[in-house]
Image (cartoon, rainbow, N blue to C red; front, side, top):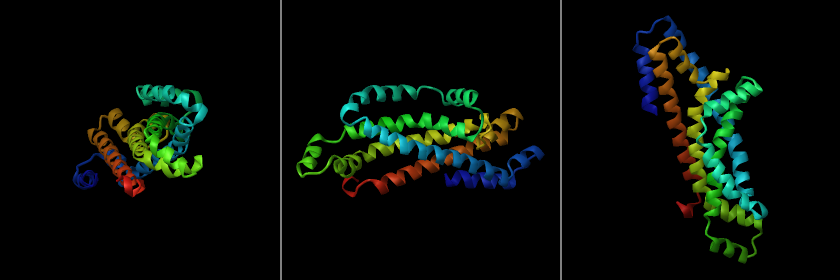
Length: 228
């Protein structure tokens, strides 16, 4: 990640760029596009985590537990849908802009987090849950102190997958006027400027590696000590 970014800056400082390439790849412009990309990813990630995890919890409780299997199946099937199709269809329906891009990415990344939350909670050892209930823990205490901590590694795998998906998929936000680093790729293609195209791809790849590293770091930090 660091090497990619450092290599790009060295190349940018020494490359012989024409006027269009120099203007498009100006550090200020790239920084603005990067900020737009990160904002879209962060908002979509927060939306996914505050909705998918509680939904997964509900699908493993009492009367709603029978829905866990069908919903997980649908979630897994939904991953086959191309994100660009979701973005374009919602843009046609709701209009262009950042809110629609965030909504599209939320729909797309919601699925792996939901599926992993359900899988993680259903994979908790039943005997441990019975032992927790046996010492008079309330259902809420069992969930917060036993189930979620034990399911956290599986949930975090889904969160990391969602983060990487969001970084890559956010490149399509440029098609609905939401900005982001995807603008460099489309500009490079439309103007036949290979340096712009490759720069966009490299920076998106570096950002994906950064969020993957951050996701692994958060997994280590949040996982209870006895489970590491």
